[in-house]
Length: 351
View 1 (cartoon, rainbow, N blue to C red):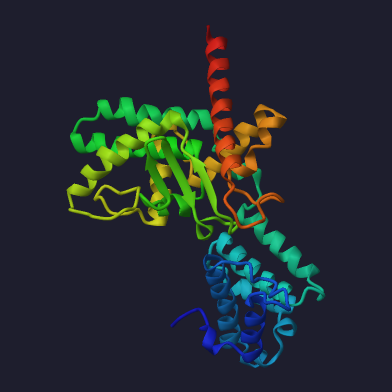
View 2 (view 1 turned 120 degrees about the vertical axis):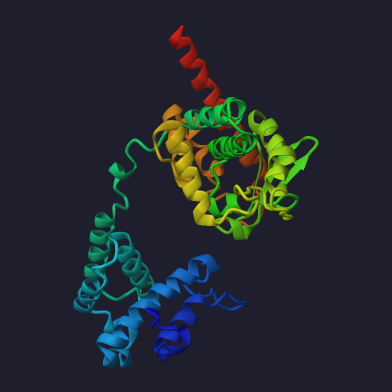
């Protein structure tokens, strides 16, 4: 039995609430409060609210006759949490957070004080926002870059077999790429040759369409020259040889041991295992973004200004639907400049 009430079975008031929140803007109106959300954000939001409705349908069917905002009493939420006690704290926080978000968007003037306190409590229990959760896991981008380069070059040369060498070349290249281009995991996995990653005579460009960025703003940047040879070797030699074993034919950039495209979750786990093996610390793809922000912010106030374009964050300048070409390219070069300065300073210190 499904734990989620399908949208078609939602009470009419809830379906209308959802439709109004997601309504796109028109010539004479501004659209719904959540119309800006993309499908990847809408799906979990709908599923989590459907989970809330399913629990109500089983535990208190009469409540579905009430208006959505009136049935969302804090006592019912506490009862729901008791029913969710078998799930992880992160799961509980996610369900409650998304359901509160939906209802608050639909009824912003209602009293949500107790609900917000409950969400904050669950957030702390889940470790969200807790700095100690990342303690020791946010390394400098220069550390991650050097680890990737060593593994892709020296590690591959010392590999016991040819297939092991290919895997090390790929794994090291992925780590070095993320160190200098810390784009989101979904965008990394979605890179396709000839569409979102372009290998040209003058360089390699990353071109992310609006559906691959969280802000919904297209983003374009050039792969730093320091890893360009590594990327070309992977694309021209390593990748085709990994694909040849199973006769795979596709345009996805990153391939697994069988030459097939990486699954989103498996890619994240793979990066975590590689960094654990190389550095003794499990660094997820998202923590590469933290590493870039930390590296830049610690270096200087001017370097910190590069954080938004490096991470493809939205700002007043990027709220329009256009490619932020020059800014993102210069930001990428700026991160590499900071890394080179850190390497030089360390060399001088050790002399």
